[in-house]
Image (cartoon, rainbow over all chains, first blue to last red; front, side):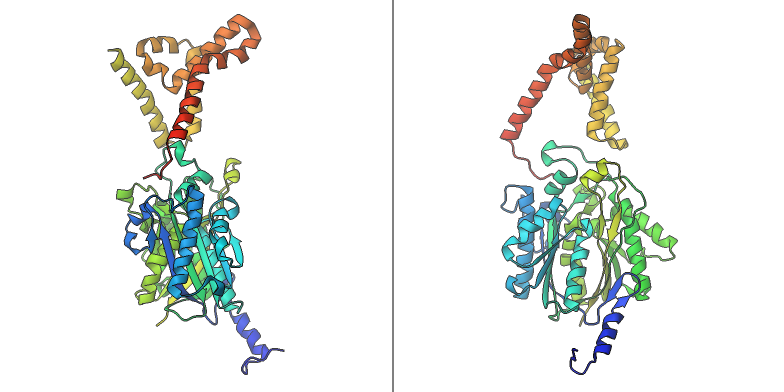
Length: 353
Length: 118
């Protein structure tokens, strides 16, 4: 029997049960905080609309390495170092690290965080990995499994093109509907130390497949999943669209956004005023030739770290739903004619005075 | 005048391919296969030789011409060696083109480093 400061076991169980809300969500009784964050980007991102907001950028996109994959690993390492540095926390103080990337076998993460020697959970959620990492970190802290967790993801244009399309040396032409994989890594310290932003709840996404097979139109493949998680979040928490200052998706792009609005409207909600998409914000479509918009795990992660969190810290936004979206295809599944299902995780972020 | 004809015809073939790249969902690999097969078919129909006489390099350099070269090689080998010619002729006729592509491609990859797309 475990008696904690006068709270009985029965009441403790009740608190734990109350955290389970609706069908897919958790509402944290004691909210974990996002203590600090770090963002590292490549040259194109540093020349974009958010350019000045990122912590660190590199002009040749290699970050001192010889291959794109190693460069991506270096970016993850730097992002973690930045997040740890800002909070004055040593790697030894981090209980668990939750990290993932787009490459097969999650190699960028493994190589990137190896030197920190933090117990690691390697994840895959495609471009929704930042949401997955934040959700798991928050859940671990809220459950009392540690005071400090690290969540990190990354993507790199060079390594992603080699992985999913053609190596850069092939010099192929990219169709106008293609997304531009963001070269970037975002790291987040999640823990019990008080800060101005807390994770008050999460809605864990399920796979949503509308049978689309067009890998060149990622936005359309992921929009159904985004709609599903957003609607589920509103229903689970008993909220309306007005309760959020912004509902922010990861990388639906211009085409995906339109589809999302339509899908959400069919369910009786209107998010057109509140919606924002990281892929549309991180690049200037007119001047940077980025076609459908930014994408990749790094897209949502660095936008969260550099653009969304500062607004939450200042109190400009009080409550935001952060919904990174992922397309769960593999290089093999696509070639074998399978459809492209999507997934999206909802993280409720709130300003704390 | 030869140069002008080659330039215009070769450019036209490339422009048509670009339209396929921009307007359809066809992958570059599929388009290249289309060109080679198209050239072989046009060669079979005896259309490509007069076309090449008119346009010169404009018809022989693009991949369409390569399809024709493959067809001509197979045709000659079959005329000479019968059934076995189907397997002999293609590589023999295209040997120069393929070797050149391999050698220059390798030299390029050794000399240059790929850089990030702008």
